[in-house]
Length: 304
Image (tube, rainbow, N blue to C red; front, side, top):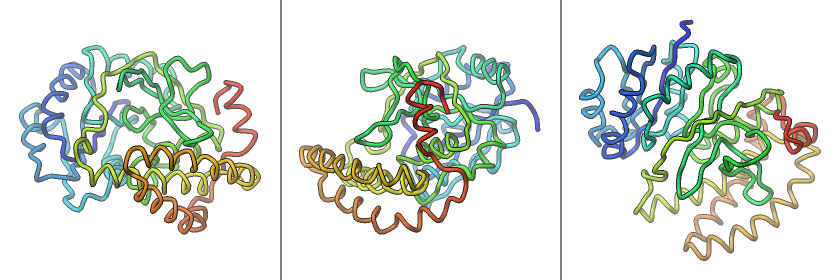
């Protein structure tokens, strides 16, 4: 497999954002062995024309799917077509400085066997990868955090391609919002660490749901459901016994937040669906799980 990098991007109602960000990607990739694969879950939006106007035909692959199978499935579909040694998952609403991809390629060369969490600047803060949280289970990790990331965020993440495939990629049933945390817990359970890269990329954040009340409700539903499914899939039984009462109390606090946001109903539907689907979700993953030893190592700042 060639020692190159493929930028993997899932598109959904992304034409306007991509028209702004893609030219920065092209400049950043100038002179580098970088290819692009776009999984478009809303092909009627016109992203294909934007891509064709920025990249030569032999530099990219475009994979449309009008059924919109979700972010997780879109990533997996694109990774299945990847022929390079490494891949960069990159959201379409992220801008790349001119030296960003060169710095990523250097980081890969330094330690090609581990995932890399790339920083994102959004909503007035800077974040690198995923962090563990007692209330919401997983959150964006502040760039100033002392301990390493639990895993890379799906918005800007470098994976060895073989590693991503070996762990089954993202759980497609999760659809979106939490699939990266699910993979992070599984990687940690297997003893694999994630490196945080000192690179922060400007990120708009939330362009696909902004201004759409229905999609905001769908997001609240998925976050509530997926939080329970991620714990059910990836936690060891001893950790689950401790986590269940904590998660129950946490959901009371989360429910109060959703009331203020006007999103209580989809939140409660998500909780109910997560409880129903939890046993089946646990049976789907038969690999190493995230247990107390992993948790202790993570909290002490030693990585996975």
